[in-house]
Image (tube, rainbow, N blue to C red; front, side, top):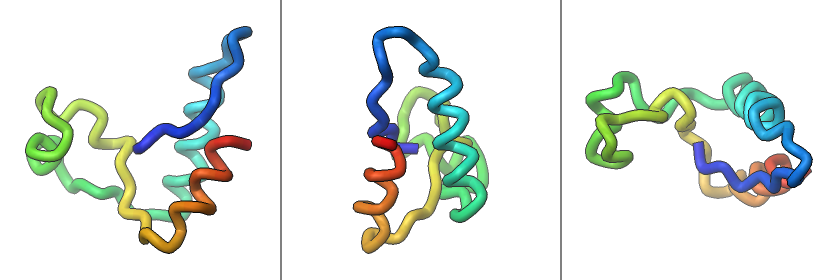
Length: 69
């Protein structure tokens, strides 16, 4: 997941990230079926592949606004 959210200095980062991910996973398919499939794109052994979603480019502005909300 490309995280474009702004986190307040007071904390709550984990809660904000979980909120954003719950909204994305309810609407979009995962971008990678396996960790190994993600390695060429993410490096680092594919870490974080469960946070990647296949989001049509036309919806990116909407997702950016959601992340900033």
